[in-house]
Amino acid sequence: MGIFLLTILLSSQQPTRTEYYRSETTFRQGIKLFPFEVHEADYLKVAYDDQGFVRLMSWYTREDSLIKTRSYEYWEDDKSVKRLLELTPDSLIIREVLFGDEPKSREFIEYAYGVEFVPDFRNRFTEVRVDSTFRVVSYKIMSIQGQLIGAVFLDY
Image (tube, rainbow, N blue to C red):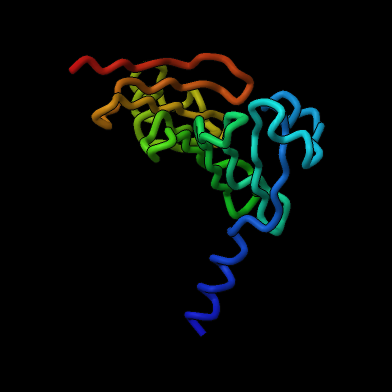
């Protein structure tokens, strides 16, 4: 029973459909590429799961060289974005964006503004940037509406 359930959970998160776009802008506009258009210029490959949620976005040059990749995870209850990871072609993390209650952002908000400043912890996101040695160099805390709540820069 446990193995069967695990198989269902894993398969439901695997990409089941792939679409191609010229850019992130055309992706947002829903303008897909026809197969013969893909290699005319740089392109964006988007993999969807069986529920239609984006799981992976990969940017490529027209010669099929990977530029970067972005993967998405979703909250189970309301299916909003929980986490995204942006990676180099070598699978090194460029940045991580955590949506909702993240410990570093909570500490910062409670210290700078007080406990009641952001009562809804799903109403913000934290962008975590790392350097080439995988050390965190900054935390940028934003409201979902795009307002900067605060930033923490680490100087090693």
